Image (cartoon, rainbow, N blue to C red):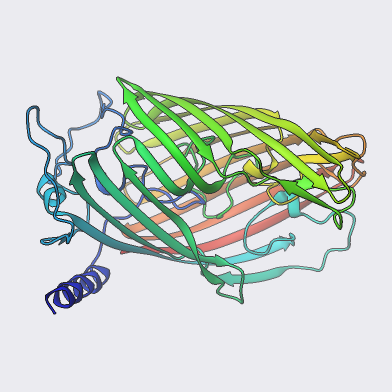
Length: 444
């Protein structure tokens, strides 16, 4: 009975938190709002906090936990007796007792396609139809980006333990979409395990677009990972084993199927240059493989390198970011072409060949006033189709977006965004698409 009463108290507190208000998050893209270290908690992956000279000192009253020299580690009772409900950063006392937090984002989009695109909800230039008659303007409403977040943390003898689960409505289904797991992971000390964004990308450098997809040339893949990450002065070093999800084109899909004998391996080094400023380099190696009924099989090495940078300046926090990547077999890791079979192609029995790709994007995000901001993004993706691929195979895409965001209070944002995309094929044919988005975001 005592355990039941405790569970009832926790559920009641969760409902109370859900009815309150929390500070708005800084991003609303395909990248999650929850940072690598949720709740403001310090872990070995947290870079040292450095502030630009022009920035004022933080005046917040809740100081994130930092273990004092010589202090004994606090171990939380397994029953989590004394757990506290939190809205905002966790303090040292919260971690000693254990804490949980619940928050949510409600987002409703109205998409109006002046020149329709294959994907009515996400602006994916690779899905632009080429060489077909336009079906005229199209209107789409959706709230699939609404998301729920649940986090918890406590101190253990191995370090700070953080758990995070989030979910949205982007699963397959009718107009609203089915509930799906977005992220589910745990961090303890320098180790992370669970469903998370790949190490082979830069989360912080992703621009704030109302479009869920973001620039099509962006590296973005979310799957199960085992990651080690630690800071050494201004350097963050990460290495991970990641679930292989090969995206292959078969010559005979009825008899051929992908194999996953080895995990993908990714690593990154990020140099912290101050708050909101860094340079990041990452690399990826993956073993792409397939087999065929009757005994034929083939493998090829997929590889890639990425360089990105983020720079924040001014009292209001203007941002500029960029990312460039090159490699072969990166289709499943690239936002615009995941699911199109462009990791590698079966070019002959027992022979698999990886498809080379190059991608770059740049963005600038002005904060005009305390309540008014924008983002302007250009992305370019270049494919190098193989000789055996048909003329209608994707060759390149262009992505261009600009928006205006109005935030009357910190937890509510209204915005409008104009997007232009172009797809060009191997045979030289191409076409454009234009979309206008009106969006409402509410955090609590």
